[in-house]
Amino acid sequence: MTAIDVHCHVMPLTLPDNPGADGRWPCVHCHGPTDASLMIDGKPFRKLDDRSWSPRRRMEDMDRDGITMQVLSPMPELLSYWFTASEAGTLCDHVNGALAEMVADAPGRFAGLGMVPMQDPAAAVAALERLIERFGLLGIEIGSNINGVQLGDARFEPVWQACAELGLAVFVHALHPVSAKAAGADPLTTAFVHFPLDVAMAASSLILAGVPARYPRLRLGFSHGGGGLGAMVGRLDRGWTMTDGFSGKLVERPSTHASRLFYDSNVYDPAFVRHLVRELAPGRVFLGGDYPYPLMQADLVGYMDSCGLSAAERQSLAEGAARQFLNL
Image: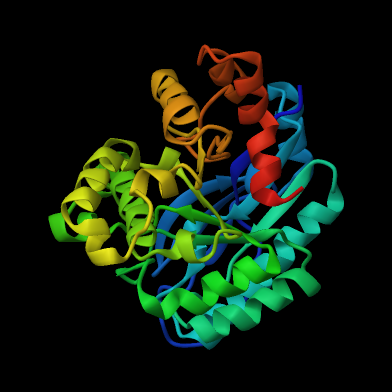
């Protein structure tokens, strides 16, 4: 069976020079032909190996693990919403170019989701055209908030409209969770607790702002199985009933909109995968392994097999939902 992993990150081996004075500009320090470190603000952010940039190394792992295709997206820290739009645009074009080169190296094994400067929606919309025409990518990866601003904020409306009209997929990944900052959480707690909270907040924000309702052709996907959204939809529906559709903003229940979104399987819990597949969003859940970083889901196909799904459910999880999300 074909297996498509939609949640796979790339870190290019080289990055452009810092165009400004902000010390947070990412920099790669190479330790050898297969080892490097990402440095931010002069400090090590993450150890890397050639899985982050080598198509050959990735395909070796894919063949070992039974993965037919990886959908490549940037390491989330590269999204760079804290720089000016011009500075971020320089990094976007460089990373999108690196993604395009990896896809071109093995187009049957890779597809790509790029990045745009979401901190400036007008610049982001302009970058979407380049994403298609220059780089040939299928959509974008964005953070779960943009410098603390929720995705349902009206300022991002032009981006959603453009993605819907251009047929681009949007994959929402946890990034700098607002709750972690408020709680003063350490990095370890952030990864295990606040990432799924922020993804759920992002999905709820979009639903309550009516974005999926206004743009039914917009394909929105959420990392980490939508985070805590699965535990929130009943409460959101209750709120919809008690507030007359949130003061008339939503004609349909939030759970109906949630069922039309896409989610990855990166929850480390076969029982919750079954809930996503059968209850929250049938036909809208795809494989997501978080390759190649320490939290990645090892043996993704074996994990899928442990979920106790029917043949039709397994086919949808393995490739059907991914093909629909990416418009393959």
